[in-house]
Length: 137
Image 1: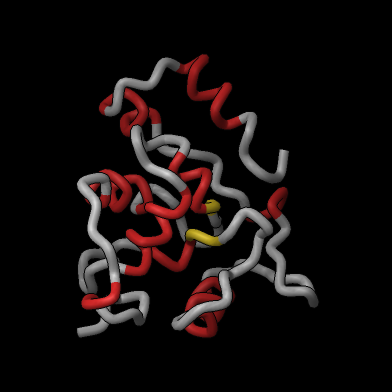
Image 2: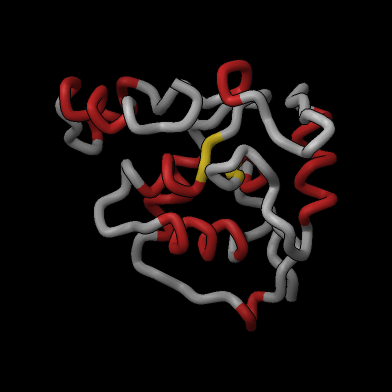
């Protein structure tokens, strides 16, 4: 059975961090995007690859905006579901250059809500240090 991102559930890996990743991705509003690495930087033990696996395995009907997570080059990764992902992002107002890149300065996610940061025990200075490494600064 396909996930909401269009991949087969039988072909995806599962990790204990997926629920935390999904909770964080729900924080990304329409019109903004985050890289796999940006998401991973806020989830203990997660890597960009694990975030990618989570997005590929996103359960349908759970309100997880998987389409808002892209690669660090500002592109939709070339894979099954890429055309649908780009189409959804364009519907949300995300613009792409002729080379298929997002303008990070215009569409980069600003980060999770203060309540998410507080629930997950982030010190404001530590968070700003993490955020400084994100694309588009």
